[in-house]
Length: 117
Image (cartoon, rainbow, N blue to C red; front, side):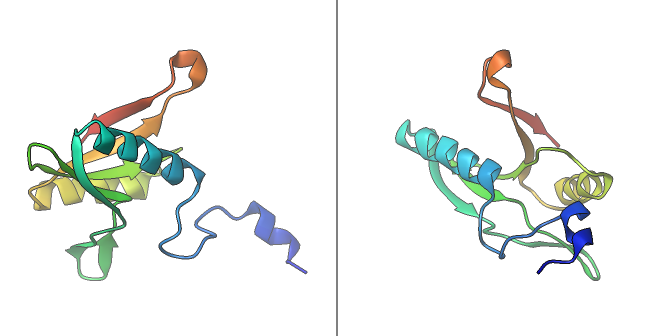
């Protein structure tokens, strides 16, 4: 039996390397882009960046575009302050394009919105 307080705790409840529903949906979107030849390669949790001593950041997806450019995509339903700090710090330290990806509601046309950092 689970303790009653566990239902109120936010955070990752899945095994590392396992996608949640939002990430799985975005992986399908990347597969479609791969079929359209916009994306050459992508990997879920493919890289981990060391931002400082004892502080690391693992983007949800590493993506190589047809142009050869590498991007790091982060899927979020909501964006906590610590996540914003990590993605901004990574964007300053490393020569990749860092992108926050948010799923748009069907009533707003669906699809994905990208915000670059």
